[in-house]
Length: 344
Picture 1 (cartoon, rainbow, N blue to C red):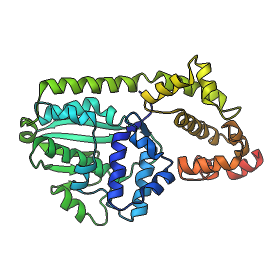
Picture 2: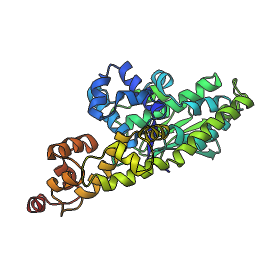
Picture 3: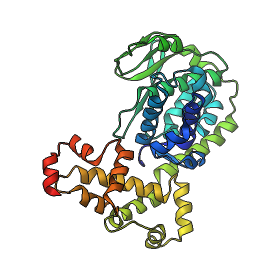
Picture 4: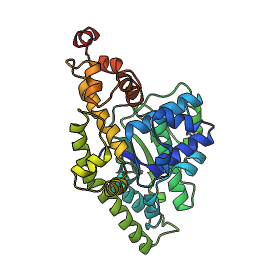
């Protein structure tokens, strides 16, 4: 599986929700290091840490600890893309959720969705994998409401959970949660999950259509295959791991090394949901994580090994990647500052 990412369709919906809540989105995207144009590219993907940082910044900028905790907002801005169209055409809500369990990677291969049968119905569980940043609770809450809102929309009924559980502690004021979910809530649980009644899950969907279901299933399968076989991206990243140690890599040089034209390389990367600049940045980030955790490399040397011609570029990049300076990131992994000074 390729690196943990979320689809641009999903992230675009989240960003539009932020805008509707009064967040200054252009400034937010710039601070998070996300190009606004990438949100309009249906093939683009965004890393789990970038999306988590986007949420962190939006909550901080809005001053709203319950940002996104609204059934209306989740219904309007929670976008499942082609997977949602496939689910709409399924025979029942249960079969639609079973399709999502199989196809979740298209929406986000950083997220997990699992169903578990219970005497009272079925639990659906949401989780996240990969990444170094903690997943903000607001991100989880919005995802949960998106799923519950989709269940209501696709059935044409007001589907309510019989119970909702979250792994994080109960907030100081949970009144907003109680109003929005309108069911028994449990905090400090073992998973983020919601219980749906068997009767709701077995009800036929009004838009069920075997032909449309088959059509969208093929589109979803194609998207899953592209995620699994992003070979050009992998080839580029392998080359970048070597080239960055010497200088800033140029796309045309990488294309030539892969025996491709520059235009073909761009097209293939775009089809795989990425770009040359995104791969350079992602490769640098991974290399920085490795080098900064090794005490024998000074920050000056790390900057050089990442292809930066100025150490200040490393400082700015670490601020964007990790939300802290290179020295602070290094200190988190037990590398003493005194040792860093000696290495320098």
